[in-house]
Image (tube, rainbow, N blue to C red; front, side):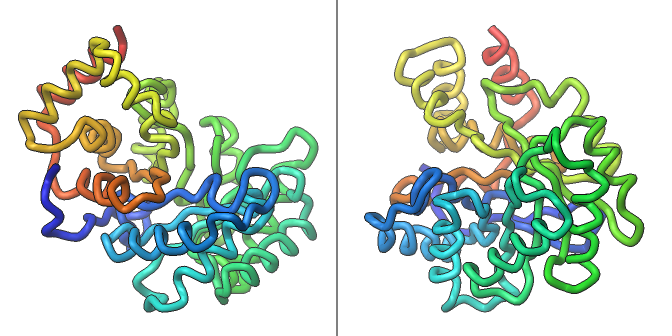
Amino acid sequence: MMPRNVPVLKRGLGKTSERVAEIGLGTWMMGGGSKPDHSKDKECIEAIKYAIELGMTHIDTAEMYGSGHAEELVGEAIKEFPRDELFIASKVWPTNLRYDQVLRSCDSSLRRLGLKSIDLYMIHWPSNEVPLRESMRALEKLYKDGKIRYIGVSNFSVELLEEARSCLSVTDVVANQVEYNLLSRSIEVDLLPHCRREGITITAYSPLAQGKISSEVERGTKLGRELVRVARKHGVTPVQVALNWVLYRENVITIPKAVSKKHLEEDAGASGWRLDEQDYRALCDASAS
């Protein structure tokens, strides 16, 4: 594994002057799935703290994770760190996208997080029930009131992303959080190039395909063998190669979820170096086979 001698590098957020850790921490399934689970609270809090110490200062959560309990865990973990060193992102669930519901959801998230403002607040999934203009109007209200610093979306197509942007008058959408990994590359067709042209950050979730990347290595598939080859070349692990592959495009950051110190260190170690184009292309070819 690559030694941890430098902090996780940062990248620009959208067209703003904000710099965000290129490898952050996702918190899905921390504190429960669709309902709270307090059985591993201490472990999760310590994991979030350790991630921040490693430089993974971008912490991503949502009101839906553990029915709000993930936000509570994040709030507890970040108490001892300087606020200006952290970038906290959260999301509003599609059942709460009416104007007043968005405002209430944000207030509830702020309370659970113990914050005065959320750095990036996103629509978690688009809704077929609520006009997007109504939801975006609420997000812009929160922005104007200083309760959120930046507006984002998640799981939005190019068309929905542009519709969302057209609804804003004093700011812009800075990020779109979508699934992106070696086994899920559909955003490369239109969304990724569009966001690159428009200066919008892609936040890649499930960058390790929820364990499927490691399975490729274990099974010795073509992709698995290529990951091992590149890992040996760079003196890193196959997981670090897979994460670094996601970061190859300059407008992409990522939020792997991990709890153990070993996995957190491994994730952080995917920053600070870059794949060369030849290895990047070889991995692309292997993943397409």
